[in-house]
Image (cartoon, rainbow, N blue to C red; front, top):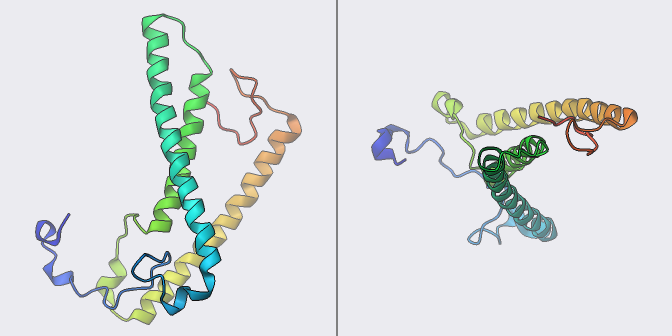
Length: 173
């Protein structure tokens, strides 16, 4: 939406000067902050392409899976129960890869309440750093719980309900 539709003319100078974008674009790739990290951004671009390709493929497969399930259940009256397990797995992959990709591109929804309270760039950058540290600590905690859960499922050799797939991550319908 544009500023005209939202009537936010008074907020036009809130984010001046522009913050450093974490992913260099065509117009700012030669900036000093990006110079010696060319190989990192090359790998990052390849991973971003892989995320886009994986999300696209998973979304197409999810749509086809749903259509096949409806056809098999209601047209030929022969439902395949494994589809009810595959759909949540594809959806989870789409959601999590999509979240990572949106964070990389900075396309996620942002409240921006702090920019209404203060326009001091150092305070805003400090708060953003604090938020990143809190997210990193939460990531470490969730990784610990995820690792414990996955290792438990590997130890007991748990299988999925309808398909004989190993239920390592505990995702089932």
